[in-house]
Length: 153
Image (cartoon, rainbow, N blue to C red):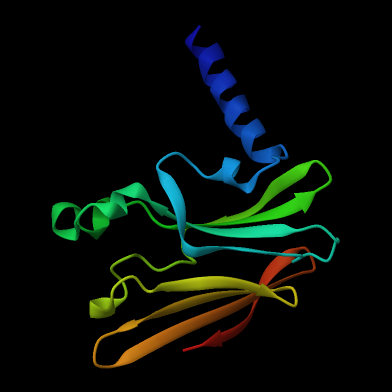
């Protein structure tokens, strides 16, 4: 009985990731929400269909840093969804592409937005205090893989 339940749970989780969904919001995991300026859309893979990139934060970020500390807050997630004839499919998930809420120094949350332009995904971060810093990372989907094509620090 227990073995059947485990196998059913695995199949449900696999099918929910691999099947096309009609709305990009249906990919957002429980406990997560989109960051401000955290949704970009455009045709990344040149198939004539709209794709989405979404930047997600865990709702635990809404609690105070002193209460939780960085170690207990789940990582921010970047999801890349390719459009298909029957909906969207998850192409990539990254828990390392986005800086944490407290990584911006005294300036605060360093996430400054996403952009898709000319098939290039750009991720912007900005922070600091007296000395300001900015990171811009540019990625292109080519040869069925994601390539870092530019980095500005």
